[in-house]
Length: 218
Ligand SMILES: [Zn+2]
Image (cartoon, rainbow, N blue to C red):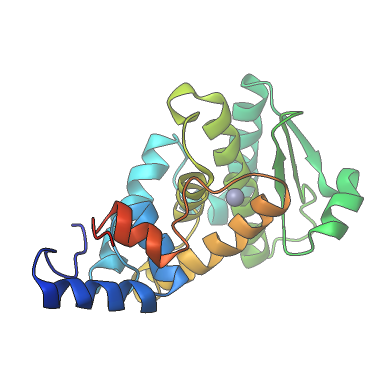
């Protein structure tokens, strides 16, 4: 389900491709880079719902409904999983300075020390609050799995972020507003960049697409 503007070769089609690439939004570029499909494609919502299930299975995550109906059990499961892999799980208060420097982050995984920091304190039975808190934890668990489980080691930061986010988004959001996923991914990628991690390719530029994907050179 790759998106194409037109087959190159014909002069008019080549011109159209160049114009499209120059006007393509960064969100659309990120979507196409990570999934092969543009965010504006009408089939994107349904595709993401399938990806959501696929990656939840692949990472061995428990049924989502548990985040709401049995949050303690869900949290316990993820904590055990991390303990088995030697990942430390601590409260955010232990990384006050880091979270002050990165105010948009709810949680974080520190690669060098194999540590996850998130809001470990469940103060209420507020379902929505727990869902958000556990989804933030789960997101970092996925990043830890990506670092520790071998086939994931070569994944670039774009693919890591995409997969960690798609497992946490609700199906109805993915279906109704698929661009929200890529907006969130772009925000996270900016954080990764601030921390010195590099993009896998120059996909933010029109020239990269024209040369490497559309095979138009001049
Ligand atoms: Zn992330």
